[in-house]
Length: 233
Image (cartoon, rainbow, N blue to C red):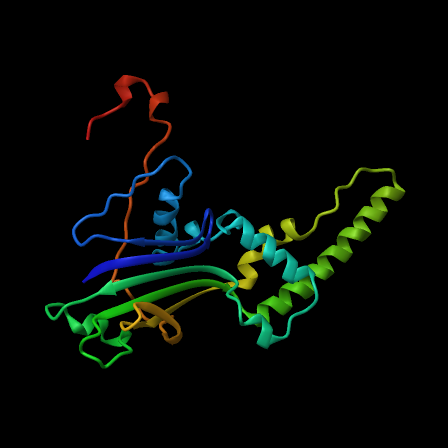
């Protein structure tokens, strides 16, 4: 099996990003802050989920955060309108397999009985469901009301108090409203497209037999150490 393509949405600088990978090795080159590390980071966060690498507010793309603020603080959307847009961080991994691969590892992920379709798509979402969208709105309104009360009390005592709002509430509580989900998605070989409307939920499926990811992050502060503390690998 080989990874053919990776698609990323709303993660840091990668608002809508696609990278095609080579069969043997792929070399990603770019200037600083171009998103190279972000590719590795989102893979790590989705494939190696733990308390230590959970998503935080700075992981969300800036445009997405601004749009999220608008729909949370604006007029309430009905569910039919809300679900037309994906609200969250998205990762899609397109995998191609061959007849020599162990089908027992991928059988539970296959959606197409066509023997010519030798692709599976692993989908990872960190999303805000409609139910949690409603909860987010309600809880933020309660939070703002308490902040206004604190500000009023501080003003009466001639004490400086900076009223908190959406950003502070989102930063502290995003884990309460956004949820991780995994799915296997159909790949349309005719049009070479990932069909997000056709999928099966695989939240309970262990994917370690299909894909495993490890990476070593580079140290940017190596030069601050004296020569005797540096070693050649």
